[in-house]
Image 1 (cartoon, helix red, strand yellow):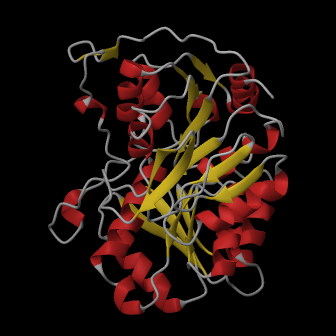
Image 2 (cartoon, rainbow, N blue to C red):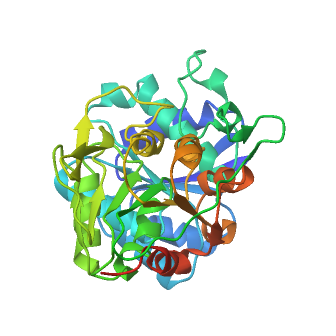
Length: 373
């Protein structure tokens, strides 16, 4: 049985979370705490007693951010799920928590009625199960099977001329290196653990990178602007949240807006971003497969596809389609450096990778392929 520690200053929220957790027979609430200091004392006293920690941000004595900083200072390795609001300041704090090593976050509902609803329950259970390495127990969600999510592998559905269904391996088209004067693009897909991983990639790219960089990071609306701002503060490249109609420029980074689907489309002799309110695909909005598919009819001479840490298989279908038509170079993150070895695992298993590299070498590898101008 997986043991959970709940740290939240609201007695009502602790009760709601406890009820959600104990609805799954594989989970138990091992302890609760009313603030970060109280929670830290429990972790220090029993460092191996908790499989996952549920952490609020705004608490007295020690908030969630300070709690994570204390874990790092004391070298205490814990899987922490942050429960956060989408308020502007809360979004900034949540991004910082993810940078400090939080496993993932779940948006805290605006009302207690929503907190007691199925949607919040599903999100909490799925995230805890992912953190604990468990399958989601569908019967725990009011007897109804929820829709597909990023945890559900979809690579079994790969189709196309270059894919052998029996072997599960793609027939990889050879990559053709292109010179400095060619039209290039870097397209990155990341999910759980992505905000922390991106902090180890984007700030290490050179200011004169010879391509624009587009990122699909799985996040809900309200958080991607703060993620872009944090990356912009630490990077030589200009990092912005993508917006509809924005033209792509070399040496700039565009992060897909949470709650929207991003595509890259031709605009005269250049390319621009289009973002629309569309249905989620496989539970994802934004979805990396959609971004990659939008490049199928583009005239980029070379597309560098990068797959970072995350659950599920988002990106593999789109990259497989690009492999059939375009000159691509595919980089994926190593298992040892991933928070969750899902998306990079799938892209490697189907044989689409040119290189599998540790996180601290991803920026170097991108720069080697793309070059500078």
